[in-house]
Length: 394
Image 1 (spheres, rainbow, N blue to C red):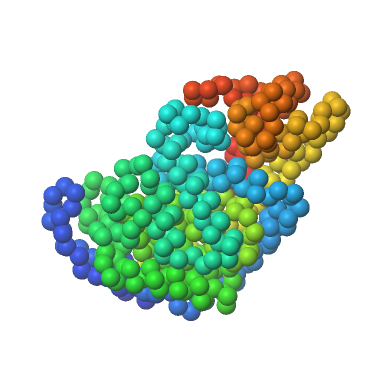
Image 2: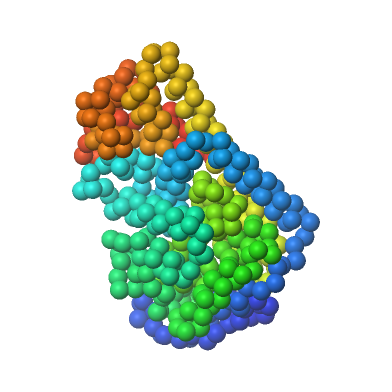
C-alpha cells in the first residue's frame, strides 16, 4: 500500500503493523483505519444529478414491482442472477444456467462453485426476511450472513461468522504485504468498535440522508473496514440492497447490482481508495449512483419483460383451451425457469399425474422444453431463461 497516498487522509489514519506474511517473510508496514462516518459529504452539482437520477430509477423499479401480483416470485431469478455475478467478482464461477437450474440438480451433482453461489442465495433470502420485518441491520446479522455464505467452503473455519482476528491485505495474493493495493485496519477491539459505529450510523444517521448517499457511504465504510477474513465483497454488495429495502426505497430485493460493478471492477476499487486517500466523496458517490441507476433500469426492464411474457403465456393457453393446473404451472415458471415433476408437485400440491399432464401440455405449446441437467432430466422455460440471462444494456 502506498503509504504516502494515504498519509494525509482527512477521514482516516495510518496505523503501524508488523508480522510475518504467508511466505514466512517479516514485514513492517502500515494499515488504514477509517474514522467513523459523520456528516453528509459536500457533493457537486453533477454528483447530485446522478443521485437524483438513481432515485428516479429506483422509484420506477418499485412502481413496476407493485403491479406484479406476486413480486416475491420475481425475486428468485433476480437474486440468482445477482448471486452468480457477485460470486464471479470474487473468483467463484458457476454458469448462470446451472444457478437457475439448481433446484432440479441433485445435491451430489452440484459443483463446489454452485454450492457456494447457492450459499449466497440463502444468505440473501435470510437478509431480506430480516429487513422486511423492519428490523435494523445489526453486527449479529452480518456475522450470520457471513457464516451462511462460507458454509462448506475453504473459509468455513472457526472464523466463519466472526469478525476477523487476523490482519488481512487486499490485492497482494502471494506477494509481499508492502505490495498490497490496500491494507484495512488491524484486528482487535478497535475494529469491532468501528463495525459498531457503522451499524449505529446506519440506524441513526440515514433518516437525514438521501438513501443513495447513505448507501454509498455505508458501502464504502464496510469495504474499507473489511470486517471478515473472506466474503467482504459479497456481503458488502448484499448490504446495498438490504439497506434500500430497509429504508423503504424498495419493498422487494428486485435489484441486481453486481453485474454493473463486475464490468467496472478496476474503477470501483480505485474510487474506493480515492475516498480513503483524499476524503473526496464526489467521484465515488457519482459512480455509485450511476451504477444503481443502471442496475435499477436493467432490473425494471427484465421484470417488465417477464410480466409481459406471463401475459403471452396466458394468451397461448387460452387459445389452446388449457387452464387450471397448466396455467398455475405456467405462472410459476416466471420465477422458476427450471422445473421437474417432483418439485412442481410439491409447489402446487397437485398429484404426480396432474403435474405430468400439465407439463406435457406446456411442452406441446412450446412453453417448456425437456433438458438434461447434471444428474437428472428436467424441463426448461427457454423464454424465461433468455430474459434473465440476456446481457445488460449498460
